View 1 (cartoon, rainbow, N blue to C red):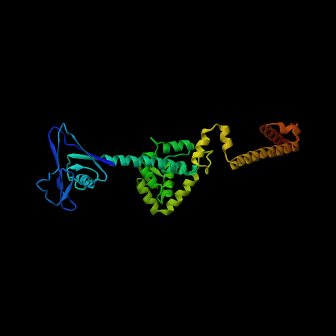
View 2: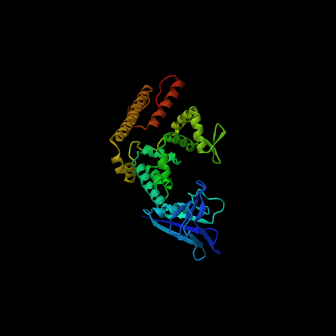
View 3: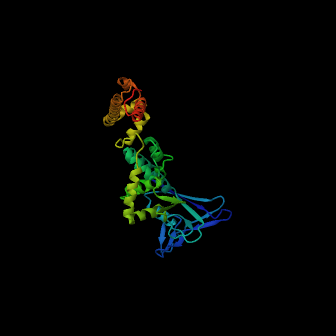
Length: 339
């Protein structure tokens, strides 16, 4: 595998700025000499035949690019040491001191980071896709997204869209944090924030009107005040309901597929348990309506209301109005009357 670094002069190229491969390592206090043949001497003076690396940055030569094979140990060591040059700005540089004149970019590392991020995007996408719908909603709250008025496909797209999804902005971080033992506590606290159970102003959270700080401070507070967290968890449970129509034990992938189908197909796809529950609910409602109608008919008969034997055909509002009218007349005359 080929690796590549690029060094550019950040001071300007109107004048010649040399980068010379000789410096002292802060940690070991040893002299490091980078040779022009891409080898390294540590605390050893070079021989007359050995030249110290030197590259002069000018307007015509603003960049120094260097490629080498992964299995070339001498060049790998040389690159690792040039990253430590005091005048070079690089995240791994422990010898950087004050102003730097050069910036080093490890293009191989960039490619590796891009691969890692892209790979993590796929892993996170599949992880969420394999969840059930109730866990999907937990992930939404974890990512500070309130899903209470959203369908599964809307939530999934907000979280996992490969270009703009909340998770996909930093999938490596999500995959790491979702495995933390305290993830359920974090979900509860973030639910409380989104459900306005925790007061916030200008990015600062308050408990009982006392400032706590940011989300990290909030978690520290919850860990130190277990009783308050238990109270908060109960308050969250009162408001924490899934959107109407979401089946909690359905896999996300299946829920999305159902949502995309026409209504008739959606109904056919529902589990037999859900169908049975809806049928029982409908039958119960119809039974209650018939029972009320018969009770109202009996009362109309007791009050000797004209046409009571046909009252089952009347609307419930008419039956109730005639009962109320007859009862007022009975109270007034203290005897049954015909209406």
